[in-house]
Length: 406
Image (cartoon, rainbow, N blue to C red; front, side, top):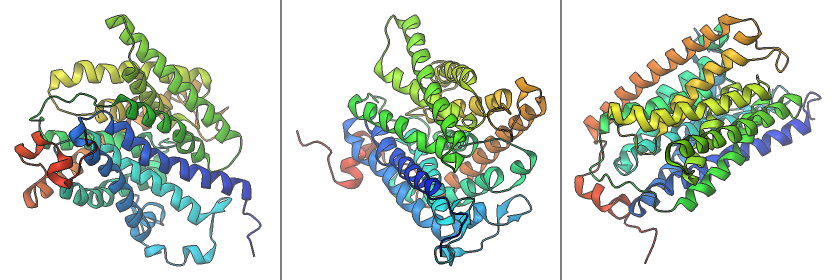
């Protein structure tokens, strides 16, 4: 017997959305990062994303899902029921109009890409064994609690924090964690980080843009008007940010670059993520245009001045565009798009205050907890490869492989 409340159209859309978000991590993010590194680190860079997806897949269905979406325990974490997804598949339980198992698989893809994003800041410096230990520790002690706070009925959810598809849970969380680890690892010994194959990066950016429709529109959990609205504003923000990044480069250097355009696309997608189910087209344009200025300033001015060596600018793009997107949600959320949300522009200044609190709490917790995890790993097996390995490149030094035999 199929439950009468099950909607086959919604279920089909969510299965497609789940596959789209998986595509964002492997191969989308993996290729985006791999094209930006030197050729001696290509396979290691790809491996970091693939391994993140694999480890997250196991953890999520052993205990991750119930700790996020189980019954709330004092606003902090979910109650660990249904460990090993026990009886969930067999019971044919529903989450709204879709099977709970589909919702759980969809949410796994968010956990996987969040931890995979962090790897971009650490390229060429991190021991592979340290990364394999970091993934389960960080997912357990950082991602799962933050996801519960915002999406699982935790304290930020109870306060009314808005995060439609992961601006806080995914992008601020991963960007701040990347910054914490970068401060532990310090600068690269080999400073010649030049993109060895921008073609990979452009393909990766295209796959990310494509997959992001599952990320944002899929977060409506139904194949209806809200998903359509989120789909449109996601595309608008990415396009606006791409064009504004191109304009910044043209005004500064007299020419636009494809790498800059790709960076703008990702910044625009990040910024619209928390707002996708709450804002209209004019707001999406404002969010997209402004986020390029935020991330460009972080990469070109703030990072050199403060001296942190975020190799692929995870904090500058994901962290800071995520912060802008979360705050913009509190400003532009429209009750005419989603009756569950009203922002500052529509007469509810308190929503912006809640967003500020959510950003601050996530920033502080992710930074401190990641520092602790990083220090524990460093004190046990060590975080960083040797100087010789770093200069040689990690493909040969760690994996005994080469991406190119030329």
